Length: 267
Image 1 (cartoon, rainbow, N blue to C red):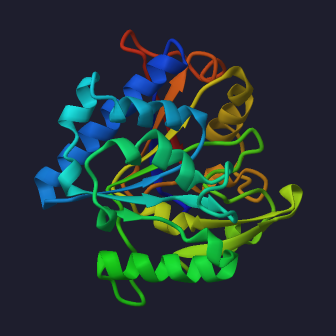
Image 2: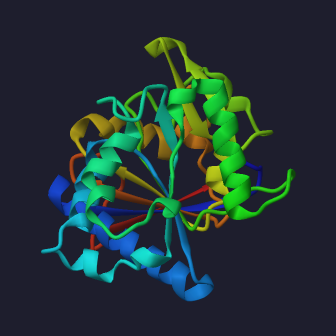
C-alpha cells in the first residue's frame, strides 16, 4: 500500500450465505462480460472455500440464469493459491473448483491454468509463474493483469495463502511464491499481493459471524499487514469490493436501503 493512495471499499450485504452466493455468481458474470466486451477475453483467478464453492455451483447449474449468460468460450480460469497436495486430494482447491464448476461447464483444457502442486511447493511456484508469463505474454519485468480476482478472508486475517508473519508478506519480486505456513505446518503456493492488486477488479467473499471481528479490524483498524495480511489488498484501481452476509458485516457501518456500504481509507 502506498502512502497517499485512496481506497474506496464498497461492501454489499446480503441476508444469508445463499444470497451471498447468488450475488457472487451475478458479479462473476457481470465482470466476465465486461472484460470480454472490452478485450475479447476474461481472465479470472479463483480461490477455494465454502462460500465461493456455493457460487461456483450456481454458475454450473443449467437451471440457473448465470450459466447461460457466462461467456464460457472466452474465459481463462486461474487459481489464486493452492495447498501443496495432489490435485485429487480432498484439500485441493483445484479439486473443489473442478467438482463444483469445471466438470459441468463448456471449458476446454487450454482454458484451465491450474497450479501443479504435485510438483512440490518450489517447483510448482516456478511452473505457475512460467505459465502466467506465457499465457499473459508478459516479459520478465511485467505482471499479469487479471480481469477479476476472487478472494476469501480467514479469521486470522490471511487472504490467498498470505498468512500472518510469513515470507509472502514481504515478497514483491515474484508473481508466485511458495509460502511456508508454520502455524499450519504446511506449504502453500500463492499469487503475491502486488499481482492481486494489479487486477482490474478484486473482491472478497465472506460469510458467517466468525468473520465479523476480523473484517472490522482489517477494513477499519490500524495498518498492520504483518499480523493482518488482508490489509495488503489495496487494488491499483482504487476500488475494493466485498460481498458479505449480514452476520459477517455486523460490525461494519450501516448500509443504504440497497444494502450497499462504502468506506474510504488512505495510506
